[in-house]
Image (cartoon, rainbow, N blue to C red; front, top):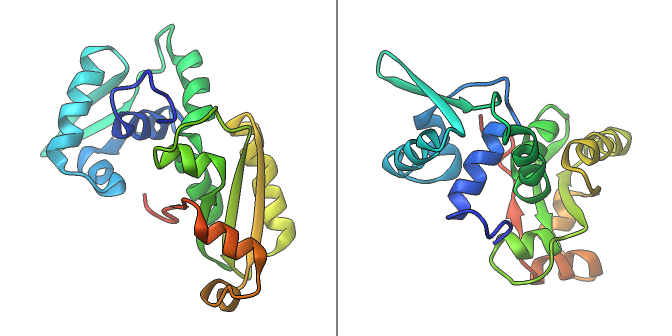
Length: 189
């Protein structure tokens, strides 16, 4: 686990999404879809987090809207912890979504290994692989902005769709495919 203080990976993902987008409010159903879990699972988690004072929720018709509770003493340190641990899945998709030429993106390396449950120390950096023909300068800008938001180095490499689909003879892609990958949900919410 990325942050063993939390009950579950869903709790980490949900908190990271909310605290790293503190100005936004999300329908609970959209969060369930985003994380690929049941609405009931998100509802139970929101109930727990609400009881702990970490999130606020309100009803608008049939919708239950959820947002981070940024008005507590825990808000700032919790946001920093979440950025360092679950932050990549909350921050990188939105940063890459607006770029032309990004077809897919994955986090690989030590962060992906921890996310997939492999034990080890907290990763020092985030390695991202972008498939497509996005402009390298734009990707460098994303990496710098992500570094500021996530509090650690972010390295983005780009490969063409053709290379991604036939990685033979490409040492980096052979290595990336042999280890855990986390697909980023570009344009998810």
